[in-house]
Image (tube, rainbow, N blue to C red; front, top):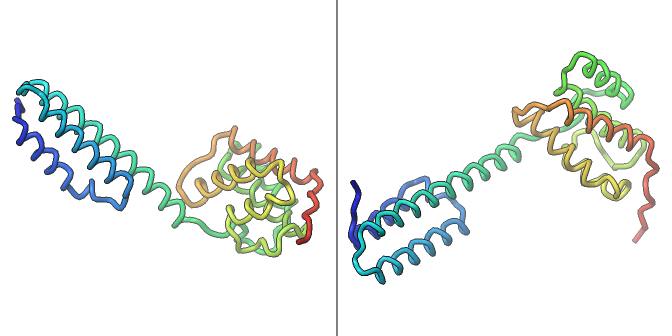
Length: 203
């Protein structure tokens, strides 16, 4: 059973933090770990030699450190993966928004929710080009389209951004759409098609 004294407890913490997984480029995480180690050291130093309590505190801190690093690294890897794996929304030349909507309708009848979501967002992208809402939509990414639609459709900006996230996750991140997600993007396309773009003040 692990039963370190004060000096051994500090050495164990320092050794744990020297491992490669704790040396990710997360400055806030590193600062938090250093602060936590200092506070534990101070706490151990003021205790009247209770090694059992030291052991419990050490195990608790190491467990919290491990969980913190796991979630921080997991989040950074997911963000990096989605950033690296993104591309143009419209990769097929010549298809209109109506054509994408027809494909989405067919996919919906077949229960292919990934295709429903993707083609519904592509319909949104194609419609922005047809209505001249953006300077250039072919070749742009889902998030670039979402940012561009903030001005003409301010009331739907959050919904379009969420749809862009879902598009990237399914198209480039290896994720899958639920029926609810797919129908939400399809409904958003219908709503934007009926909506009148807001006037953007010049200057």
